[in-house]
Length: 41
Image (cartoon, rainbow, N blue to C red; front, side):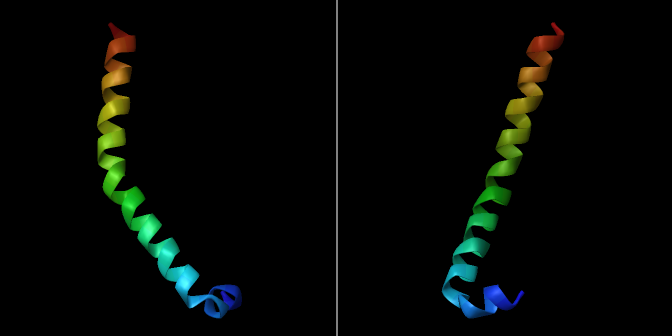
């Protein structure tokens, strides 16, 4: 935790990356679901 406090700007960038990942995850989940359906056929 102390390391993050030393680099507040870097911490903000990490938070933005996490937000981007969470926003993209639903699309990824759908893509994986489609791939599984194709494999099951």
